[in-house]
Length: 524
Image (cartoon, rainbow, N blue to C red):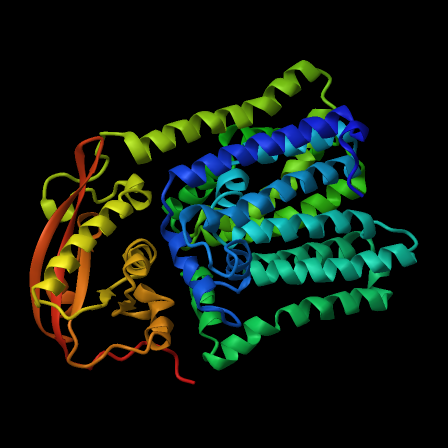
């Protein structure tokens, strides 16, 4: 039951204030920043519901559908509104977990460390990506793991809890495949510390419950020749060539994604525990480590041989945050501990101010400037800026082209990659009642291989627009020359920031589609 405000403890009030401030900051960011590459791509999960998708399971689309009121709202804010709400719940959950493993101070410290983490606050707490529901269900599962795993003897209450865990773990796996590590953590703990669970029917029933949640993923992959499983296994299959650069990128990425301050505080706590410092009940520490270390070890070891992304291992640090909070809550110098707990969110706040300035207001060009067709390339701030300007330019182009008869009314767009196809879809096509099609390999166009047919397919003899970006430019004659009779350049538009050129947009007519592109879909 939710307590009345006057019944809350002082610590609970601090946590709620933290959640409120964090939510306000996220809302301001959502209203200020345009969507990133992945966010606009996952909008298609909302528009085209399916059992699963090439890249990820269905949960991110479900979240987007719920919080956009079945895509009644189609702007940036409502796409991010779901993650903002889920993040508020997740912050309260990690506080409750901290209280369970130790005390209220631990819960408060866990909430502060969680809020200070770049991954938790921004990537999983603000961006419209699968990590947002993943972390919510990860924390729900972790909360019940603490209740049932160390139980001796196993009682009726614990049996109910493990069945609830099966639901949460299944929902986590429906969010992102890393959710499977929740069960891996349970298996590791059970085999090492509490084998009584192997004799319990509820243990296996819980596994069956999680397996039922995986049916949508299985059904979709059966329909599509297991393309999703093959794709993701290919991303992590070792190449057996040692790559120190990949490993270094992964380790530094973990350091950065989790906030250097938070990362160091976690490492200090881990060292203290392995040195037998008694600051948390042994069973709880083992649960947290069994939950965190397998995920961290798997993806960090993969990085020795092939390229990985640091946020793949990031949920492991969510569990370690609780361990770190318990250590710092028992630190002999609480003035010092409180200082470091606040330092993470403050540091993150400074980074966010700098990031918003760089993305929206900076006159600095961080990418290439030597040639117009590569202008802005390698500038990471370009992805979340200038798309409304692209839309305004496109409106002028189509008004002229279609009024003067150069292009047929309601001509659609073609792109060669999921980026910028998804940005054009969200910021340009939907506001001009157009469709975006993809022409390219499956690795290039991803979900657009399926969207082409869902959107009735390309029409032979029809003309299309192509919009090329200087920071991601490929010659359209090389990309589409085999599929169209002619390719004609139209306008070049400058995208500016702080009255300085940031990148250039090139508009082309693709004339008379030959009907010879074959979608790179798997054989069924």
